[in-house]
Image 1 (cartoon, rainbow, N blue to C red):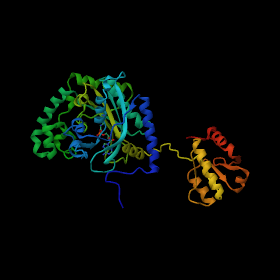
Image 2: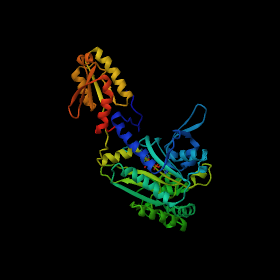
Image 3: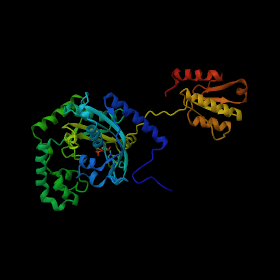
Image 4: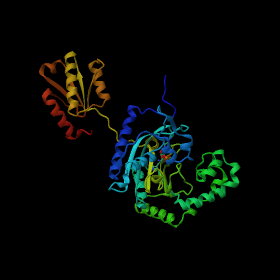
Length: 428
Ligand code: HAM
């Protein structure tokens, strides 16, 4: 038996209903926030992620699915969405569009070669947004509010918003030096990766999974102490906006995020639901003011977030939330005898063309079993076509909610059913 690759999963039809519900909801929320969908390729030139995500990140160093195509080009399955969106923004000169900032969202598969565990897959589906072109702290608050709204609208409540500021280039430079001074005396005690990180990108040391317990971690200099006046003011303004909008947050000065492009505001939303599992981060996001330029565009500020639908579903399950999913047939046509079966095929086809959700038996089942099938599909109406009905040119219609049964002519049936559905019984 061939199984799915490690770290991937099938979404079976039962579960797809949940996905559809969530996807529809997310499209609607994006619409209310006035973000437009963008669809970029699932693979990109490897170079994009080296430059975009950053060569010192775990994602680039350990987690990319990189391959050479038959033309000898190095391509990579996208390990995140921001770099692709920014590439497209630059390539399509979106900085020239009349509506600024350019507000985009995306939804689709992402690939990371990680050690799989609950909430950590090798293929997962991110929903993400990017707002490009504005350095107004109000847009930071909008992006955070958007993320919160995605969760709250689905009924989640055990949420914790954590924010931090990584400051601008100057602030980060000063902080970087402080980190080097702090960690260098302990260099020999840190993991091999961190010894390299200390030279290449000391901020990454704070994000290390192996050295998390090292005593020097707890005493490491906080970025917040190194923010220059402008960065400090920016962070204050973002917090002000959040407060005005009634969004509660915590500040975690050690939160650095796993991608290199961030500056100023960074944030994560965690689930505090019991039983959610070891990985509690639902969403990650932040500001990346240098990225557009890094990828060949004009100097442009940007901010966004992404979360996986897999972790969102985990959170819904942990909080015991039942989404209002409905999957009922409008009508099931039960047929007795060869001629009735033929007629049933025609009727089902006409019902469907009229927009009704209809089905019939294809397993040569007895009458009783056909009724049972209708029941399993929670069919709102059962249409019965026997020899009597055939000879009369009629069909019996049973309303399963009321138990009422009526005989209707084949011509009447469509209008009758449509009327019944519109009469408050049809929920789509
Ligand atoms: P990230 O923190 O690497 O950020 O990923 C964002 C979210 O993707 C995580 O919070 C989590 O929900 C989900 N995720 C990440 N890895 C996995 C995995 N292995 N299995 C399941 N879910 C996962 C980014 O990707 C940035 N592009 C976010 C961003 C957009 N920043 C600015 N704009």
